[in-house]
Length: 369
Image 1 (tube, one colour):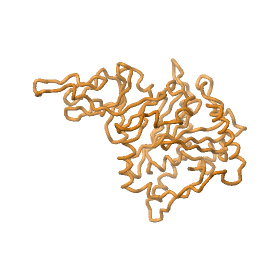
Image 2 (image 1 turned 90 degrees about the horizontal axis):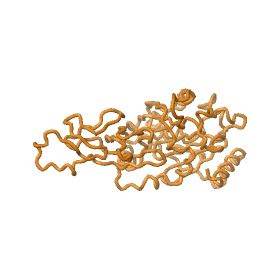
Image 3 (image 1 turned 135 degrees about the vertical axis):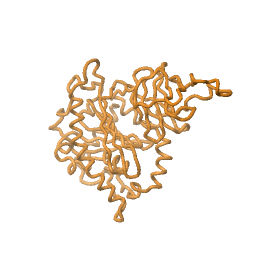
Image 4 (image 1 turned 180 degrees about the vertical axis):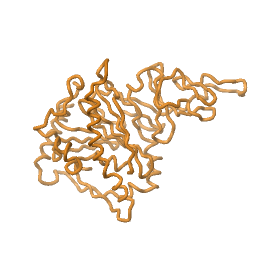
């Protein structure tokens, strides 16, 4: 991490630990209308103007390690397939044959030499070009060049693969902006997926995002784990362009090192600040990346409808080379499930509240902004 930035974050952590009032420059955060978590028209607008116009995390390079490796992505409602070509380039297409719209891949993930529709066997190469049409004699003036799979914007930055259905969207590097440099020391290309955990929750997706963008709740919700490890009084928040953010909270000095991974599971590129804090990044719109020196999750909040969310924890860890995955990665995932059970326990009740006649705007604090 840049030494000047690290010194600034450390100064903020120390200042927050000892302050007795709002920090200098803090202002009252405008109340958040409860309708944002329950309004059907807003939900429709989000699907149109956020989910189909924003860069969304779809895969990691390690998921697509060899030519022909593919993964389906259907979180926006549109069927999309992400695939690595023989030239090494990762591309995305609508998973829809140009003949009658049937999918060209049906499995969640796999490897294919070609993308072949299982309805009538039209076949496409890994660049989306139409290559084979059974009984082509029955089609008049069939233009293979004009009948390739419809592409979807797909770009990869530091090992993370994103898709965007908006052809006019800015480049992914511009979208991530300054946050990208601050995440660099985790060395995204060197990571491997180690597991996925799913939770189906009766709450709006934004209520779930909110839950992981603050630590104000840890004394009451996590008194037997996170509250023992972290000093929530130190929390410091940074806001970045395009809706991204960073949150850091200090590990209690007497517990430094207690959660450090073993040498075989450690990421040696991660600097000292991350080892002395819990630092997470909010990737707009729906991901909280709880980056760490060992295994860590991307907490992905995917809307099902206005009051239902699928919380997907995608776990990554430093590449350990050949042999079985270090057992402590699995142990960390299991331990985190205890924390998640505490985090999710309030969600359904919150949703019932915001949908009730008693709903009023939320008054959040500067440390939750």
